[in-house]
Length: 244
Image 1 (cartoon, rainbow, N blue to C red):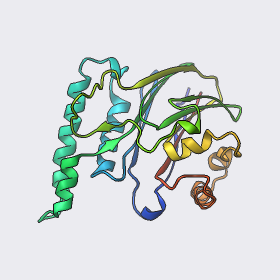
Image 2 (tube, rainbow, N blue to C red; image 1 turned 120 degrees about the vertical axis):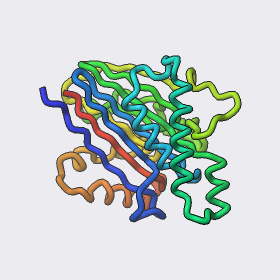
Image 3 (cartoon, rainbow, N blue to C red; image 1 turned 90 degrees about the vertical axis):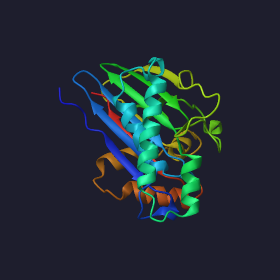
Image 4 (cartoon, rainbow, N blue to C red; image 1 turned 120 degrees about the horizontal axis):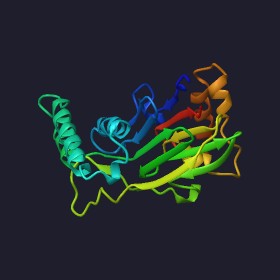
């Protein structure tokens, strides 16, 4: 059976139009399973996009389950080393003082990892990037949040610098579910996930984005929802995996 294609839609926050967002995603297709990862870099931190990219790639490639792997701390430390090296290389010369201070404070990002094998999915999350499981167009399960009221201004994140007292081995939340042929698994960053989890508002027109053939449909919808104050003005990314 052919591996289903993963659709990705992304729009940066309004003030960054024409620039890449700090959201990053990765897909790892193995012979008997598929791994997806989505990371939302905190825009207010330095080189957040780089940190989110490192986390997303690692989240899709690491042996499952990463939270139970005794080498987790070493792997995170290795990613932090790469982030530091690349971050300093990107500094202009001579580097402005505020760019130096930004790197010294570090970057933060959420991380959602999903593995799909046969009729089962497993997910782990740090932060408010969410998995939404749709069947027949209806939301049947969400993780780690189940209500728009759970979103907050400062969610839990993974830092590019070590912090005293952090416990990465126990931090990620975990979930598991059963999927059927035709189900859709959505990985969404916080602004879109929060919007999707508001039952009093009409659900986003997902089918239009998937089948309409208009690459601007998602971007136009995001602009309208932001203007109507139904969608937070933040980097907005959606991954769609159709269950085979």
